[in-house]
Structures are given as C-alpha cells and as structure tokens.
Length: 227
Image (cartoon, rainbow, N blue to C red; front, side, top):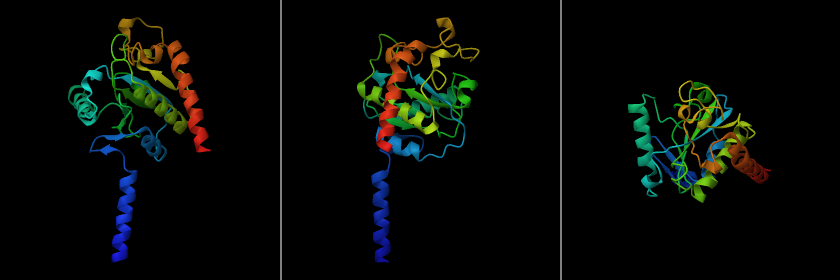
C-alpha cells in the first residue's frame, strides 16, 4: 500500500508539472511552449488546409488587465452562443497581449463565424485579442511573437507552406457572399479584420511581404530544434 501511495503521488506530481497554466471547463490558457507540446499531441481527424487570422476588434487592449483572460473569453463565448446562435465560441485559439494562448474550441470541431462555410470547412481559427486597425492598438512584442510562433506550429502540424491559400485573413472574404475575393473588393464589402495594421497591413501583398516570411523563418527554427 505504501508503494502504491508513493507511486500515485509521483504520477500526480508529474501531471501537475506538465499541466497547462490555467484551465477551466471551457478554456485552457497556455504559454507558447505548452501550446507546442499540446498541439503535437492532438489527434486531429478532420482535414485542415487553412489557418485563419482574425482580430477581436472588441474586446481590445483597453479591456485586458493582464489577468482576465477567462472573463474575456467567456464574454466572447456567451456572445457567440446567445447573440450569434452558434454552438460554442467561434474560434479554436485566442492570443493575448501578454503572449498567452487560449484553447477554447476542439480542433476536431469546424469553426464558426462570419467568414463563411468555405473558409471554415477545413479551417483553424485564430482570434488575436486587440483592435489592429490603424490608429488603435499597437501590438505588443509578446503577442506578435506568439502569433508567428503558433502559426508556424500549425503549419508544421498540418503540413502547410505559408501562402494565401494556407494562411488567410478575414479581410479577403466577401462579407455577404462569403466568397474569397482577396484584394478585389470595395471596403464596404469586406471586414478590415485582422486589422489594417496587422503585421504591416491586411492585403495579400502585406501578408506576403511582412507576415509569411516571419512564419517561414520560424518554421525552420522550430524544425531545427526537433531534429
């Protein structure tokens, strides 16, 4: 019995050490390193070919106090369920100004949201907390690093190469028809999401010039540590 109790205590200690930073019934908050371990241990049985980048717009930086991750996530979840009529919070992943990451929707569950069924069918949705339109929130280095890092990890996990066909901005999808229009739409027909200042801008050229190279570089760095 004594040996059994000692063994049980050791198992509990190991589980505690490897546990995510904060977890409750609907959301799990992680560091970048915890997210990497968690992601590579996920058995995702559906096809994933598209990583979506969004910004929350509201809540934004002024609503984040450094310790209210769960409260903000629950606010989004309640809005999505009660106001939008969805069955859960729309996004799989949320990033925060402090660099933390939240997992709220199972990866095997297709995301919901206004981007449309085509983008959602084989998509993973990342919501980045903040309003990244020009003149509003200036993205912190911590959040910037996290966005690049987790996007690179998702590319590795699902065998994707950064391009307009694998990493998409909400701005490239028509608000009403839900068709991909890339840069060929009037502002009134598309959302600015993930923001007109998101990594240099929200156009396809901005993504190719400012965002994809960072993700590609990070993919190489991560793979080098895994060899």
